[in-house]
Amino acid sequence: MHKLVVANYKMNGNIKFFRSLNILNKLKLRDTKIVLCPPFLYLPIVKLKNKSISLGCQNISQFINNKSTGEISPLMLKEFNVCYAIIGHSERRAIGETDDMVANKVINALNHDITPIICVGENNKEEGLSLVKTQVKAVLKAIDKSGIEKTKEVIFAYEPVWSIGTGKLPTIKDIDKAVKLIKTTAKLLVNTKVLYGGSINGDNFTDLTNSIADGFLLGGVSQKLEEFKKIVKGVDA
Ligand code: 13P
Image (cartoon, rainbow, N blue to C red):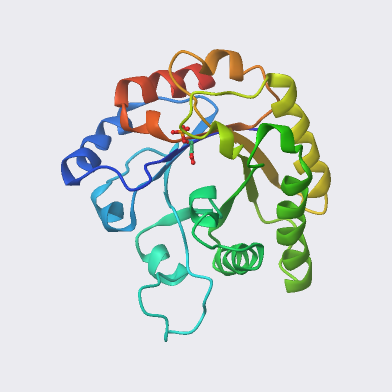
């Protein structure tokens, strides 16, 4: 099963930066896929000519009717060749995105063949994994109820909130525990991957490749192209 490296640019970058990503087309990868997730406005700027690289977005509308000012629908995203959508990032949950909203977004994406990358994670280190289980279960319940085929690819990203942008990392043992819990809770789905995300950089990623996670969701380091390439090549090695 191929590994996945997802770049979440969050609200960063500009036209010049997203044009410069064209250099990534030169990468020759064996068994790793890259997903680049710029802010919506920059999606058409990233010109991909490499089968190992796909486009993703950082959010998707939960609504299906067109009376939704300011929202972006899966149909619009598909016009720009978006194949993946990050959903339920903790930075969105922090501004009010609930498990129900996340579930609706996941269903909306899957119904239009956009692969969701669903972010889950505990807020504090001491909290344990009960919130992660609740977050995964909410999505699973919605998928089961919707009648969507269980063979569609659904990706989870374990991102402990306390690790995002802090330089603090969980142990490999703790990452593996979360990955196992997510896979067990989502066992209804045939085609799942679980990524790890939070404070990954060009120095610490080698150790993290020893975890059973199926790849990484990168934040800040995605903006440093040389370091990003180093991580991708290391994962692919
Ligand atoms: P950092 O890699 O900057 O900690 O961010 C991780 C993240 O939030 C990716 O979605």
